[in-house]
Image 1: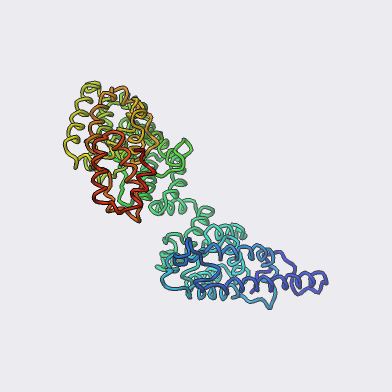
Image 2: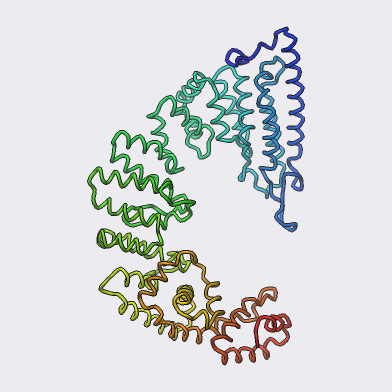
Length: 543
């Protein structure tokens, strides 16, 4: 049964001459577009064909879904406007798209198994998805029939998938009464195990369709389902949160805020469970395009703060205020210090320690499982000295001197804590004249830092306030003693690449000429036949 009554198109059986000419043109274009479709699909399955690519000539080919789906999108751009009149014709094939998709699936299955296409998958574009769904709708007897056909189609496809946004756009263009029928048909089956899987599966087209229809026809069910999906995608929590705030259900809104932020944190690290009082959000959510006032998580924290104010939870307000500030300005030491002095250290004890660890890990590039004691680092002492008036410059100086003396006499510890030492050297270069005297040493220290090299302004400012320059002589002693041992052995050079060897050798020449001469004499004896080594020394070292 064709969907003629709802489309508003002219009856295809009319004898009107203009209508016949128009239908003839549409059919000619339809056949032409299907030839293009079949031609595009014919190229599938060839590992050296048009839909595979290599980054380098020696690499194995990889299937590129966009190369194929973009072709179909171009075809469907022309196909979409004529689908409706074509579907009305008695000779049109109701299963034409189903058959075409099975051929595509078969073509993709012909690629070598090591390409792993079933796992990678291929998602159609929005226009292709709309063409497929619109054809199914126009050639179905009812909403239930459409649903059954779509489920049958999806069950037969394991590599190619419909576009979720394309499906939503198609659904939105259907008559509202038809949308209601689809919604009712799904509701009547939602307790069926097969439907539970469809509605709860990640990236399911039906999940998105059902949510959108629930938003239109049953807003309470929509919010209920959004809350259920928060662990899958934290953005689902936004609509129910707005509703709870508008209806002044503060306790429930607070719980949703926590779920949203916990889900966002787990998006980056599945082992992280966010606790507002002990886990610093800035360290849990590291990759963020923007952390300004318009950032979604910043808005959630603001709502959480407003809820705490309305419910009179003073301690919670303080905790959230610290989380808010450090999330948006994690490397603003001065701002954090002002906030801690305003609120007090006791309410923020766990979070303050977490923030200090975050600063240390960011600076030296170590993760918590690698550096067990972040407090055993000069950056941590610097923060403590600046925030605790009972410690200050004298305490910081004692800690620094003890550490530098220890690594001066223990090369193994120097290597283990080299990152912290390199960061210190680079910072001292900004507050002393050491760069002018030892530029190569400063350069290699900067190049060797694996941590975040961008957020250093406050650290250097505080180092200067704590008389950090007074430690330069001892830092230079460490460089003078240990730099010769840091020069790589030419015997372990990869592909005769001696760049790192020459860089460190130049540092030794700069700060310890006697050790430099000793190294060269040793190399002349042990590595005299390494022509590329001596060519590199000749071009990179000023003798």
